[in-house]
Length: 248
Image: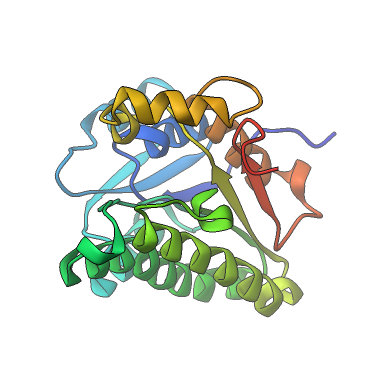
């Protein structure tokens, strides 16, 4: 019977040293998956140690995934070190929130470059390997902001909406080679990114979430684990909202 096990699989996970990405990495390791992760400002030593404790492998690569060459190096060196790439999770992302009339060029460019260029470059590098293997899964982390928009997040919402279009287009390109491409759209999740929100913003957000709470990083990680597993073998080009019903 198919299960949520990723035993024998190898994954690259971007932005895995904190927040949602770190929880995804932990859940993948627990599911029997070897992983390659990038680190920039935050080291990945704890993930390497956890992998060793679980009898798995974690290969940590210094890489800024807003740069194409770093994305390509992350994928190629992980494949060389761990032997293959079965799964890619494009999780890395940043925000630079402000109203459009106050948004400078740097705030726009940095969000687009990190959130979209990393998905493009990592996916392109991974697809080349997956095409030869005639198998693979790419899971892109988008956002409900890319579905319904959010005031003060024109840059972020644009990047996440772009990832949705990218997901659907790539799914059509590679499905004949048994490669699935899917996306997960989190709503408000308790992370460092949301911890700095003013109380008034948090209270207003809770009012529009039917389940009445912010999500936990585990809520997102479990959705990603399902989509990457054999249980989701007939799902591609889909965007799974994990938002407590906010964007229904």
